[in-house]
Length: 328
Image 1 (cartoon, rainbow, N blue to C red):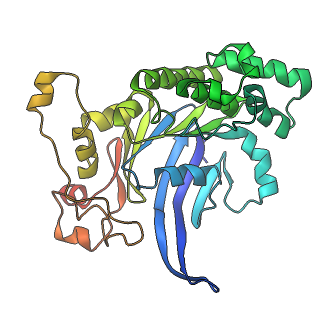
Image 2 (tube, rainbow, N blue to C red):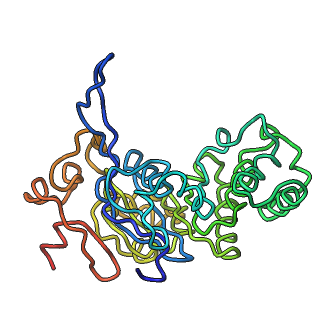
């Protein structure tokens, strides 16, 4: 395995069974939330994962942390496949992999003080307790821009942005190598979003973290990500360095997403072409055959409805699209 790769995801699949019947539950279908996803996350980088609601972004993040057990495929952390591991063995690795959740209001226990919340991972994993844990909690609160005396307060006494800072402090408490940030700023005001993104970027550099940053907001992802993977209906359709993706999106879905991102220049905004997709994202319960994007694609070919495109490299981009296969 490449020494620079921290996390490797190989042909990851996660189906959720749909059952019918009261006394005897019988499986009648599968929700294909993630359907064959492959990518690497390098040491010290931030990989952005973007797409519409229902594309499978959050499910990928939970599979990486083994909060959801994948149906098939591999999730390798430093070359170790997590998928077949027992929970008792996974527990030892969870110190190095932590989540930051989307909703700062529901992710913190309202009955616990901030000190208990941030210090809990230290106690659970046997890292510190007593006065040592208390001192470490104070250090963590300072690192995320909060005062040490706030450790005695309860979550309801804080704003949304402050609560998310508490969630970040809890995530970095065990000195992890890898953090999955699942829409960490989507529930916050725009002005607070920038503060949290800048904090994550600062902690990444200071602590040598590797991040998977999940979001539907491409302007936020652009600011923090080194590379970006675009998901559609359970599959990654394009993966490229952040700058290259924004300057030259190759997949029709990526182009449509980027055309919807507002530009703070009235002249440019007025002159550029807006790509409006047809219909809504299909149900993962019954995804279209071939390329799952073809029913909404403005450039689809006849073969798009029959054959799924291969995920191939084109320069600095990895793209799954028959249009590129035909032109190359």
